[in-house]
Image 1 (cartoon, rainbow, N blue to C red):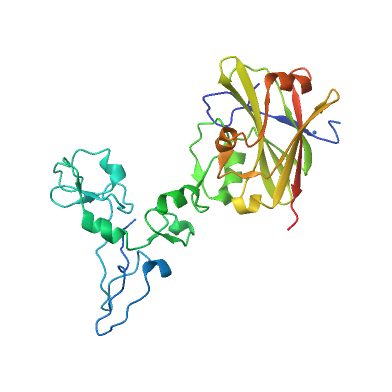
Image 2 (cartoon, rainbow, N blue to C red):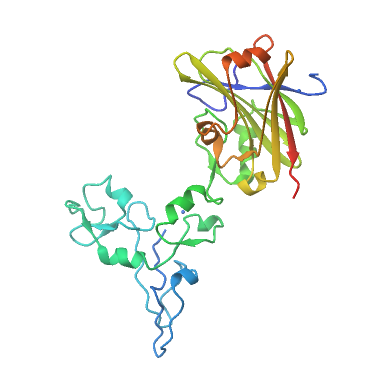
Length: 316
């Protein structure tokens, strides 16, 4: 019986597995100083923002010339170029503007769209902190670099790594394993660096995920086998190992997946991905062990597929 990783739009099969020995197994746009801080009575200027950090919490006391704090009244995030305003001059960020017809501040019309070029100029002269500064990120970036960085920031919340599930949990890295153990109790965890991942009933129709955990070297790894129908009548299997950890931590390990039987062997070796990256990106890029149904049947035994999984540490 498939064991679901939370309520899922597709069946999620938790892999049965045996040890190998047994199985022969958050914001204000608090503008910092502009291009140069001006101190009354002084002819000196501080370095360009690109040479020193600008923090939004820095006030304008002490005679410093600063700008008023400015945030989007809808999402409370920084208003970044292109900066739009209503006819009364109230600002709203570009993303929220797409969803609005009235100014959220004065209820005036937002049509036609009016850009505030002066504020855009200011925004190009300061550095912005990452949106995840409150959780530890210390980077300050030009507005053009901010979105790309935040998509991959190590300090952004972790989502539930259970593939195929509708679970919307997010939290810190330290809370991931606790979440999995309490919300997805059906996932089996095996100890040891060398185990067999046994996916049962691989002939189940439709898209299916088999999931299990492997614990070794003081870390937890998520093993995933996913079956997808890429196009009608052609199903493929994707097998990958994810580290319950950061990308930097993942670089310290390597994994090997091996299908072995009937005098045949199929092997894949790679660095595990962090759960921040997820399974979908790996499958999209085929950065995992990929094989079709015909190959699966060559190694399966009565509809069950054993994948030998070996985790190793990399030499420094």
